[in-house]
Length: 293
View 1 (cartoon, helix red, strand yellow):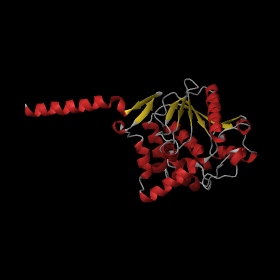
View 2: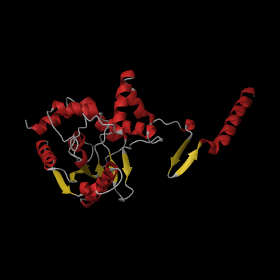
View 3: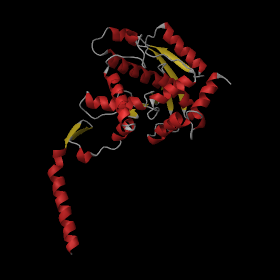
View 4: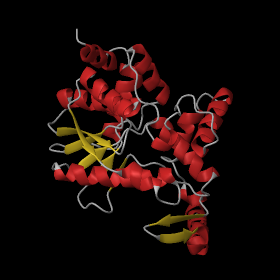
């Protein structure tokens, strides 16, 4: 059996409950794939996007309806070792990648501001643009469950707002294009277990400015790492804490929210507070009249 076949078998068999079921559930729950879609699966070279690519291949083979996949690797200026590792892993895993180059790392190096934020925005724009050239209507990114719950907490603790990483989004700059996150309900610990089980090695941090970093071993003080460590600590108190964080943004009670924004308009509970209170009193009065009749 070829290596890629062993990897595919592990997804469907050994990791069926922890990876495959979560992957399929996310796609079905959030309606991420439709018949006739042309999806650009965006591969950075890390464990998350490589596993996503294999899962997308599997659901294309065994799914309910036909759709097309393109496997894109954008080279923003990787060093030779990282680029070669991506090429070798794609060959080992039988992923037919298309590599296209950009000068994002060079451009970001000359700009002020947060390099990570600027780089992420530029990379996404390049991916949308190239995917559209290939006739795709969607791009798929490899963000997973832990990315989602970390984003929720980070927005509250550091951004003073309740906001999450959405499972899919319409592009505001590329009309007709959509971003989807098929790994939305797959946990990082299960991705790591899959990687170890199959003896696979992926690039950890390809950024030119932090090439020596490791996603699993980084001890820096980044806000995301702080949040990740906080969630790990909270899990020791309540093993369901991550699920509760995830479900909280699926179960927002607007009647107990002070304020929110919708389509650029700010709302406050005081906007209709007196009207709602009057309706409640009228309802109680009507019920009392009915009971006494």
